[in-house]
Image 1 (cartoon, one colour):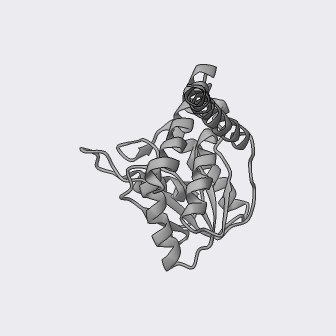
Image 2 (cartoon, one colour):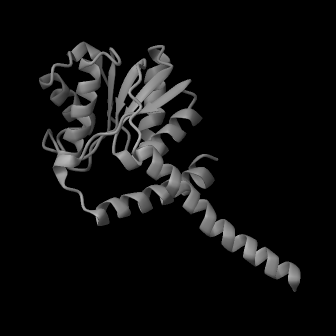
Amino acid sequence: MKRVRILVLALIVLVVAYPTWIGIQVWMQSHHDELHSADAIVVLGAAQYDGVPSPVFKARLDQAAFLYNEGFSAVVIVTGGKQPGDRFTEAGAGSAYLETQGVPADAILGEDKGQTTLESLEKVRDIATENDIDSVLMVSDPMHSERLKRIGSDLGFNDVYASPASYVDLNRSRLTKAKELIHEIGSIVLYQFIDRW
């Protein structure tokens, strides 16, 4: 009976402690902007409306354009497929927007099939292999950064940095941020125990 109690206690600690530790890592990474040169800037897709990036996607693209124009990389990779009924992919909408922000078309590569973070980054890895890209500077939501770095490292990139978009102008509430944190904890746990294997 004593062994069962110890086992149950250990299981409870694991169930509580592991997600808490992940949450701390997600939170800390979300407050860290790794401005570092890389072979490519990778922008994770988000919603687009008939070719026009949503406010969240626009913030990511603006950050990528800033990084490109500041010389952190000579290549930008945009990601994201499309939802049923859409005329444009996220990658296509992102590419068009980046060009309006001064990023030349020949500096932009695209992945337009991915429907999830993992799918998009797997396709980015294929693009990277074809273009001798070993290091990446990821751009997405602040809370998304930790997961991007983990997946990028697992996919074999030598160096993975994260420079999150700023959502100051979007007035995100504390509740929204808390939901994003919980979502990322769950996504990383699922990735570690299911997708990764």
